[in-house]
Structure formats: structure tokens, C-alpha cells
Image (cartoon, rainbow, N blue to C red):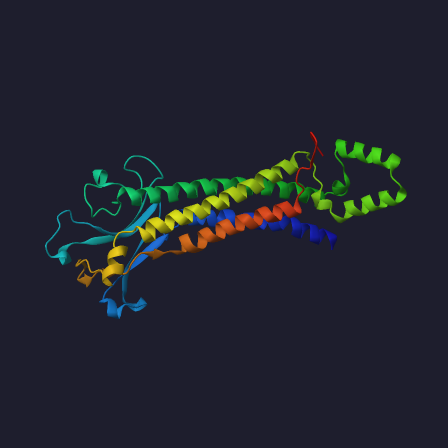
Amino acid sequence: MAKITRLAAILTPLALATVAIAFAIQAALDRDWASRNFYTDDQAQWSPATINSTEYRSPFQICGYRRDNTSLSLDSRDNTYTYVCHRFGSSGSNKTSCESLNYTLTQSDARYGDERLCQQIHWAGNLVIASTSFIGIGFFFTFFLAFLSMIMVFIPNAAEQDSPRESEAHAEASKHATAHSHQSQDQHIRKRPHERFLLPVAPWFNVLLIFCFVFGGVLYIFAQFYGVLAFVQSAPDNGAFASFGNNNNGDTVVGLNREHAPWVQGKALSVYASVAWLSAGLAAMAAALVWRLPRISGRNVL
């Protein structure tokens, strides 16, 4: 029973760290940061059954219809379209998902945006990369500490082995401590063996992983903030839709009216990112409770 309890304590921060890095990567790679639906009928008839297509946008992807023929016909029904997803980098001239008119040369390009919109999109993307990197480093340290703890659980007497410094301290204490104090100390060691490490530097690894999870989680919250600003608040047509109630651009695809809804938050922005930073915070808390932190007395780390 004691071994099961120790295993549960060890696996808790590792499980939370796994969830954090998995959802951080999923949110970074997912296209559904924001989406808008195109309908076959006018606004009064909008329903899931009348959705013609859905466009998606993220800091690194744009998915929607691309006009295949190079010349724009006066009758838009004569134009042909293909639904595609384009991936973009996080930096580089004319390589990101938001570019000014100097690069797109046309406002109909899906990448087109003003300076404000592009700045918000670039901040969101860069913060996601930084956050995922820190959460990944925290996951690595968590796996390392869990591995050390597993060794102590499955190798006989591993949990009872002291480092040279601990052995010397215990020997000195045994000269002056009473039998009652020895018994109390032994009971304490048996009660919390998962907090004893094979390496003296392990507590510092715990500090690093806690910092990485907390800092990475905070960065993901800021990424969400900039994502909402860019893909919902500053997204083109959202203001017009709110003002006029129905934004009909007059375009058609294969004879279907392309009236569209406003941009709204997608699962990657509202769900996956939230799970990532929440799990990162919980993993940091679990690591602080399960594994020992450095104890500093004067200039000596005990």
C-alpha cells in the first residue's frame, strides 16, 4: 500500500506535465484559433445545416477558399475555388501569416493586415513558441525527477540510502540525540521516502521545473490575450458585422451566396491553450508538494 501511495505521488506531477506539453503543442499547431462560417442562405436562415464552409486562422495557419483562375470574372460564379490550408513561419520577411500591403500587393490576400493586426498576430505566435519551449523544458525535468523517484521505489533499500552529507549529519546527530529522537527521525524517513533523492542537485532541478511551468503558463495566458485581440477584436469584417448585422460581400462560390458570420474564438484559443497553462500551473504545484526543494541555511545548502 505504501508503494502504491508513493507511485501515485510520483506520477501526479508527471501526468500533469504530460497534459500541459501535449495541449501546448496541440494549441500551437491547431488551425482553429478563430473561425467563421459561410452560409448558403441569408442571415435569417443561418443554422448548422446551411453552413457552406468554414475558414480558420491561427498565428501559423490560414485555411479557406483560394481562387484558382487568375482573372477575376465580373460574374463571380465563373470563378473556381479550392479549399486549402497554408502554413507560415513565425518570422521572416513575407513569410508570416500577416503581411502589409507592401508584400501582399492586394487587400484580397488572406495574409493582408494593417500594422496593428500584424503586431498582435506576431506577438501571439512568438509567445506561443516561447511558452511551449518552457513547458517542454519543465516536462523534461519532471520526467528526470520521476525517473529518480521510480528507482528509489523499485530498487530495494534505495530510499534508505543517504548521501555522504546526510550520512555524516545522521552520524553526528546519533551521538547527541536520545533514543526517542532516533525513533522519530526514522519514522519521518519511512513516512516520506519519495522526498529523498539519489543526487544532491535534484532539489535544484525541482526549482527549475517549477519556474519553467509557471513562466510558460504565464506566457500562454499572454498569448491567449493577444490571440483574442488579433483574431476576434481586430479581425477584418467583425466591426462591420457588429455595425450592420449582416455582412454580405456579394461574392459567390459555385453559385452559392457567401454571406458569413463574424470571427469567433476557436477551440485552440479558448480550450487547448487554457488547458495547457492550467495544467502547467498544477504540475508546478504538484512538484513542489511531492519533491524536496533546496533548504538554505546561511551559506550552506542542506
